[in-house]
Image (cartoon, rainbow, N blue to C red):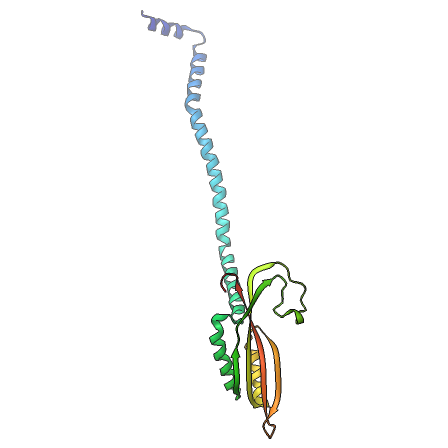
Length: 211
């Protein structure tokens, strides 16, 4: 009997051989399974994180239609306000609109001038009117916008009804404006016609850097 066989024989005859077998088997099992347990623990953690991320992504995705509707609504509101302003890009359109209003009111244009826009920084709580007639509180911090004030002077003549119609249609334009000057006087020997001189300030806001 060689040494290997002798050791095997002694082990088989040992009274605690099953305890030894169980212990050795357990140690081998732990040596094999512990790395797998660590790997599973990492996978479980990753799974939990991914599940939470998926839940959050699903929640955000579910709210997207609401935010898209809000964005569309804000764009419509902004477009409606911008349609009432007269930036440099809309000056030609404004000229045509005023001439058309005069003609539709059965008035005659005597003088018509669109002046250069004056620009200044627009601040929080600001007013578009100059300091002499500004009733707003002192403005606050800068907003990143520039206020454009564009003077438009028009002199027209016609019957009282025609001039009144012209003023009404100007108001119905819905533009953001301020009537700086209005002078009305009778003309002609019969005094049945009147001459109206009006200076309107049209407003627009532009982002700093665009003007």
